[in-house]
Length: 189
Image (cartoon, rainbow, N blue to C red; front, side, top):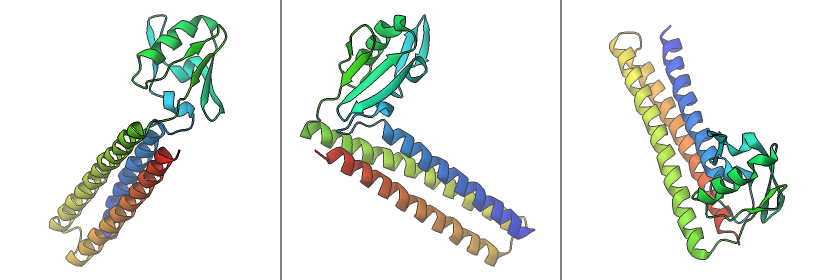
């Protein structure tokens, strides 16, 4: 029974760490690289008839060229609202509305902007590592409780502590690899 308890604690910690990693990948998609990526517009909310609505629910987003995003709204009446939402976002993009679709040319990144984005990527990586550490801290505390409640022997707890640490190390390595890959994409000219 004790093994099952420590196993469930480790499973919970693993699940929390996986969540942190998935969240990092989603956040990194929103950071601009030199290539057009519709995920760049994921955070944009459009005032659609008085209701803030995610852009991807109002239109089809495509990147037909490496330096262009095309937005085809399902309702042509939303073109102006989509254009205003993109201009007021902090993405620094200039949309062009031709009455049917909105085209967003993606200008090449300046060296200075690339360096800012790399800092942003590193910061995101560190923020998500905090999530890993919190999951580890919580798991270790839970294992300690199990040991003090006589549900877990000291040896079993030390083995479980090592498993939690190994899990943490593996996830930290994966976060480092993911952020390094994104930094490389950002710096690519």
